[in-house]
Length: 150
Image (cartoon, one colour):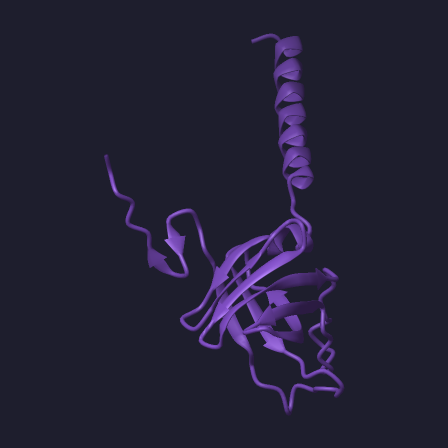
């Protein structure tokens, strides 16, 4: 192989690596985009839609409404809980408002913690919250979906 060919092939390899790196950075989702979809635990399922609609099903019943997510997350060193998700729903003909602090634990899990409205909550008096899993196309609320075949 000539020197010119070696330089050209090295250049193409470096160029290809730069292209792949840029594509991966361009495909990174914002926290708001990560939230979109269905999430579940053993007790509840919640779906965040792109249009800011929310569908929340729990033992208390089905709740429909709107949500607002700031996308900000708290510095781990800060002990003060900082709500970043606000939900306004109607459940059993009653309007209810909630605020939560959520943090993503990878791509398919998130921790959600209720922050009581009207009072400051620190790590010492707050519950650990609940970890939710992302539902995929094969699951609805955690159970495998059985699809009838024709």
